[in-house]
Length: 104
Image (tube, rainbow, N blue to C red; front, side):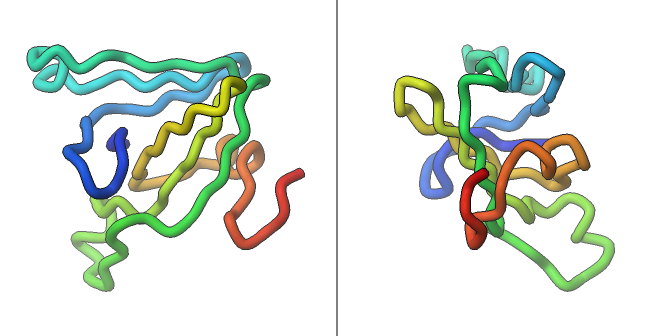
């Protein structure tokens, strides 16, 4: 589960996919009804960094749906996309760097 957009605006809910070649965001059905667009970028053309998300609860039941991680994606043209995620997954953690560590 992922939300796309800056933390201080209306975020678009959906799913973020990572393949060998691209990073792809697909809005949920309700978001597509409101004309929200898909987004994608070639993995080779982006820099990614991971940081703390907008909400990290201490209640175990809520923790599974909390947006605990922020993923910043900087595209080749310098544009920035922000995603807030419930989980990272091993492939994404291998490709991105944590904000407090230098980029590879």
